[in-house]
Length: 233
Ligand SMILES: Nc1ncnc2c1ncn2[C@@H]1O[C@H](COP(=O)(O)OP(=O)(O)OP(=O)(O)O)[C@@H](O)[C@H]1O
Image (tube, rainbow, N blue to C red):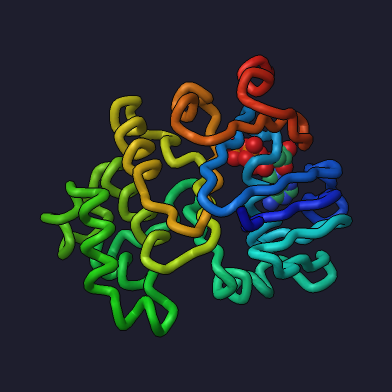
């Protein structure tokens, strides 16, 4: 199986603040991997480091065999567009959607490569097959949707291109438990083909038995598999 994500000796944070300490991690094609840990232990920072949204002090990150590592001297966010073009899809925590734009406009905005734009109709159909409730809401501004529907839009936008690695940061956060579960189940049904998915979550029960592996994160370090993770904190 080919390596989609390879992180070696990564120490990262914000400016001089070190949040992640010497992380090693490999995710293979076709894998769904969960990362669990309490609030503030560094899951989002790891996603930011992969996306180039924060610099890092040491280590390396490869996406599908290509180094995407940048140090903070080059500026957070400066190369994120290139990393995204190399095959990263980000489904950020807290949605980051725009109230005045419609569901359809959000999905279209996710189809930013020429290939994805050309085939956006079929891609939207695929998203709507996964998130059926959006089908009748395509012309609706997202500001008028429920929290669960907004989350579907945010995740759906990330599914509009052919990514090698999907990063989903706490997809159930802030949703009623039943809705959170439904969103998570839909996300986990996605056909990965040759890509991989990395999902951050505080609630290990939402991932247990549904992903290939669960890694724990505690105080900026990785802690092995699920059983260890659920004992954290
Ligand atoms: N922009 C920032 N600048 C400085 N420190 C930050 C910034 N964002 C997060 N931190 C710090 O980094 C540490 C890890 O935060 P992070 O958001 O990565 O944790 P998390 O496990 O993803 O938690 P959450 O569930 O809140 O996303 C925390 O101590 C936090 O205060």
